[in-house]
Structure formats: C-alpha cells, structure tokens
Image 1 (tube, helix red, strand yellow):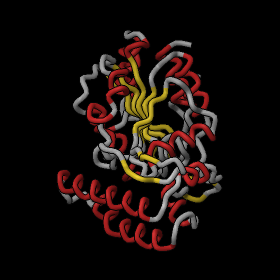
Image 2 (cartoon, rainbow, N blue to C red; image 1 turned 90 degrees about the horizontal axis):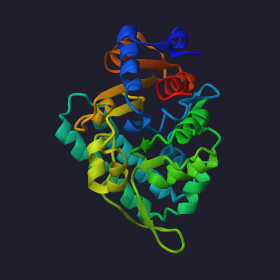
Image 3 (cartoon, rainbow, N blue to C red; image 1 turned 180 degrees about the vertical axis):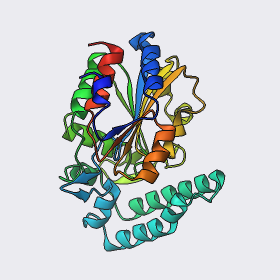
Length: 293
C-alpha cells in the first residue's frame, strides 16, 4: 500500500499532504547512501500499551521487581519524585533543566552501583512480557539492513546501552546497520557495575551533536549524509537534529493516545503523527517508496 493510500487510515494524521509528498520527492532525488534513520527507543520502537495497560519503563521494572535491595527502591523513587516534576515543568529554563537531568542521572547511577546492579539483571529484565515491539518494526529494521541504511537508536535509558542491546537480541531484531547511542557502564569480571561512562545521556540532551563527544564512530557513519528520517514519540526531543547540516528531514511522531490538544501540538512539529500505539506499516511503506523495493 502506498503512503498516499495509507495516509487515510484513521490513526494517521498530517497537516500538509502536499508538503509531505514534496518531501518524499526530494528524498527520492538522493541516493540511499545519503540517508540515515534515527529513532527513539521507549514508546517509539516499543509499544506504550500491552493488554490495555501502560507499559512501565525498564528502569521501573527494575525498581518494582525485587532485583536489588529495598533501599535501592526507596532511593530511586525519591529521585524520581524529586526530578520528574522538573523534567515535565515547561516553565523551567533549558539550561537549568539540563543541569537537573544530569544530576538525576548521576545520582541514580551511583545508587545502582551502591546496591549492586549486575549485568545479568538487565538481561533478565528485557524478557519481561510487557516490553513489546510495535508490529512491523522487525520488517522495517530488516528492510533498512537490506538497503544498508544506517539506523541510530538514541535513548536516555537509565539502564543504558546494554538494555537496548539485550532487548534487540531478545526480539531478534539486531542488525549490523544499527548503532546504539545511550548511557554505558563498566562491569567487573563478575558482571557487577563498577563505573558509568561519559557523556551521560538524559532527556534534555538527546541531540545528534552529542555524538561528537563520545560516539565518534557513530557520527562518522552519518557525518556526510544529508537526509534524515526521524522517528520519535515526544514534543521535546524532535529538535534533536538541530545543529546537524542536513538537507531534508521527514519527522514521524508517535502520539500514544488521541487527544485533540496533544494532536494539534504534534501536528505542528511532525510531518506525520501516528496515534494509539500504531504500528510501523506506514513507515515501512514510506521506506520502500523512498529507498526503492
């Protein structure tokens, strides 16, 4: 099904169909070697609802799953209750919010170390049945791999790059064209957390330009590519491509509910908005239309 036909599906919205089709035309003029895909992880690749219940984040599953000491749960919740309101407060200036989000991550990493996080725990956590990929994600990932198009999965996960890698392996969607950008830890021979690496990724610095600081091998793969397909699920992170010298960008946003107020805001910044935990079939069709069958 073409994107023109698929666009009529009831959970897919856009403001400017003509402008969107013009963007597709611009992408087609470039070679596939000039394109990369960048995607968020939680609630973009993964579902927001399973069995009609909202899925907790991996870090929430750790906190509530008796993997670590009870004191870890208390301290972790304390940090959440302190910093989460700051994260959501639109009145706080960007600089101050970035400082607080960094502070949250550093404090949380310290208590993970203090209470003995083991790498094997993360491997076990990603098997939780509530953590599910959206339908057609696997087919889209496989298509990108077949076309040798780089896919960067960008996440501020509190359990870092290992949680992403284990999850991809668990769902059998790990491909050689995928690069993972997230927090990273050092483990001892017994698999015990001993240190966290920098730069620290948090919700307010998920930007392509941070790749230059600690992910140069990833940046080298995309530095000369001028066209971006961006997949995200929030209003704040869509500016993550700012500062990167792209020519064209198509932005697809997942709004995991249907609310007129939010839908209007999403349509202002995304070319396409997919609501109600929609699948990746539209994105797969778009990829095939742009990059060829």
